[in-house]
Length: 112
Length: 112
Image (cartoon, rainbow over all chains, first blue to last red; front, side, top):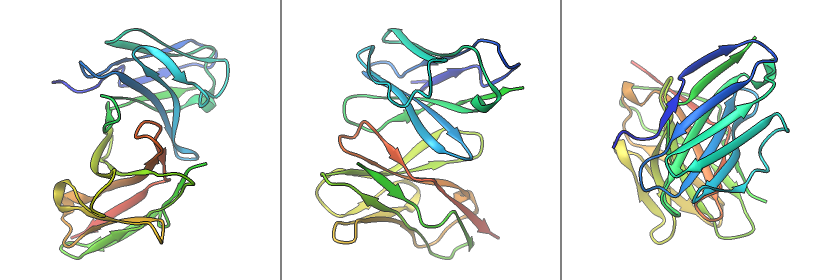
C-alpha cells in the first residue's frame, strides 16, 4: 500500500486566497483525521470522519476552515480566505477502527 | 479532560548511551497511550502503543515504554541510541484510540 497520500506537499499562497489540501487515506480505513502542526501550538486535531461522516469538528479554528469527505478514498481541507496565521504543516491520518493512525507526509502551507 | 505532558523539550545524548523520554498523562477514564516519532520533513510514525495487558510495551527500533498507572507516566526508553534516532518524539493519549491528544514533543539529538 502507498500509505496516506497528501497533496500538495508544499503550498505558498497570498493572504485572502483560497487553499485546498487533499488527502487519500489508506484503502479500507474507515477513519480519517486532519491535524495541524505549528511551533506555537504543536499538533492539533482539527476534525475527524468515520465512514465519510464528520464526527468531531471542534478543533476547526473558525468558519474559514471546512473539510469534506465525499467518498472513502478522498478528503479535502479548505481554507477560505487564508491568513498568514494559517501557515503550518497540515497532516492527514487514517485508521481502521480503533487502531493506530497512519500519517501522511504533510502539506507545508505558507500564507504570505 | 485528557492531557499529555512531555517534560523535556530537548534531549541531547551521546551515541550508544541510554535515553529516557518522559511523558505524563492526566485522565479521569481509562486511557490508551502512544509514542510517535517524526523524522525531519516527514509525517508521524507509530513507535509503540499501550492499550491493555502488560505494562511493558516493546516497539520498533529497539524502543520500549512502561505504563505506570500510579505515577500516570508512560516514559519511553532505549538502552543504546544511534545517530538515526535523532528525531522528534511525541507522546499521545486517547480515550478510545481515536481522538489523539498529543504532547508538545521532545527533540532527541544523538551526538556522535
